[in-house]
Image 1 (cartoon, helix red, strand yellow):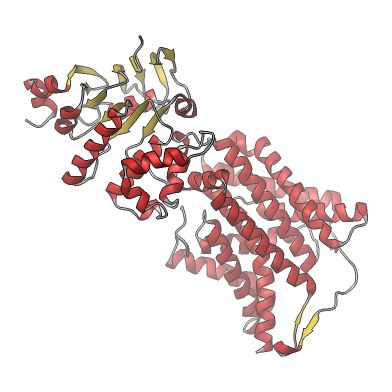
Image 2 (image 1 turned 135 degrees about the horizontal axis):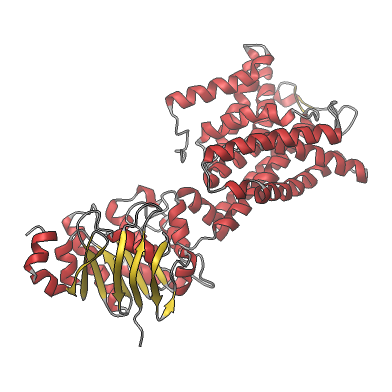
Amino acid sequence: MTDILQLLIYGLVLGSVLTMGAIGVSMIFGILRFAHFAHGDFMTLGAYLGLSFISAFGLSSWWALPAAMVGMAVIAVFIDQVLYRRIRRTQPVILLIASFGMALILRSLVQLIWGSDNQTYTSGIQFPWQLDWLGGMRLKPDHLWIMLISLGLVAGVHLFLTRTRLGKAMRAMSDNMDLALVSGIPAERVIMVTWVIGGALAGAAGVFLGIDTRLHPVMGWTTLLPVFAAAILGGIGRPYGAIAGGMIIGVSMEMSTLLIPAAYKPAVAFAIMVGMLILRPQGIFKGTV
Amino acid sequence: MSSLLEAKGLYGGYGGADILQGTNLRVESDEIVVIVGPNGAGKSTAMKAVFGLLRIREGEVRYRGEAITNAKPEQMVRRGIAYVPQEKNVFPSLTVRENLEMGAYLMKGDLSQRLDKVYTLFPKLADRRRQQAGLMSGGERQMVAMGRALMIDPQLLMLDEPTAGLSPLLIDETFERIQEINAQGIGVLMVEQNAKQALAIANRGYVLATGSNRYEDTGPNLLANPEVAEMFLGG
């Protein structure tokens, strides 16, 4: 029983990381109609930006989070303006391939600048709390923070999408691009905000991943599959679905280690994604595909 | 005094051959003007061209005397021209109220007066303001679509087949609403398949065929014209 609870915690932590990535992937698909393959490497770059920030100023590891979020928001908009905007009017598959290329560029860049060795935000071990009232389950403070901050960010995204004019316009554009155009909704501004949010959340995901484990140039790339699985499971183009999808995939991946070797965790995400595409391709929440 | 809308000699299409072959249109501010014609005559195309949704290769569109040929939809909205497409004319995952808010995206200030005006015209929308537009019936969606367009307090309302797919009862109701909207001083330009009913409430009508004007007259005259009746109105 304690094992299951323990794995549930690990699952929710992983789910938080995946959710941060999947909301961005889902939003970008909803607005721009292409699967953003560089999103995993956005996470990686964000994690390393955070690392450089805290080592430059000698700050504690959590300061990496705001630095990564701001940095990736700016970089995402920059990449969109320089690369994606120029090919916006071509077919979505061209954007998809371009984002694949961007993924390779970013990964190589990370390797060039920071090297290809494992790195960590803090050396030393964090002692977990022993929760005797939960059968001696252990909870690391960092894990609690990852879950709480994700919850806060999700709530923020929700408020943005439902309470602000620009957030509603983003949902409107994702719903019906042509009608948004004839209503006078400024598409380019909505696209820019989509990248700000997508980039910032990818940065957060990267830092969470770095705090939970370690930093490595392929950390984001290897997380991209479960992120896509989460976005598809929730119904791509639906940010709320991405939250449900992220949590389901994260918990399933961790729980699977009860039955099968841990090395198969990505296969679990892949299996859920394939199963979902066969049984209910529109996702839990009806997606926009 | 220049017309509210005047389009002269429009040529253009979707990139290939011209669909519009010298189309002319004119709407005065107190008028309901209807475009009828056989399928493929370029009715919807003419309306889209006027609104800047496809490129006009030759010809001119003037709004209150000002040239607006090939202006962007956003600029049309800012000038007070609203357009309701035929299909997919609501945001399905947004609530009724959010749909209306999106109509007034470019408008500054408080929206409550604009919302009240739309709710007065379509009381049903007030009751359903929190409902997702995608879950509503075809007739209700049409109300949402028109309501969205009216949120900018337009001077000119362009409707592409507002009664398509509606039951006879709802068709009558829609035409009544259009007359009410027109009575508020809003010029209406619409494309309609229900040509007889539409011409009956219209001040003037255009019969388009293969992208150019075939007939142009008052609504009653067009209805009374035996050639028009034979060609387009099904006897």
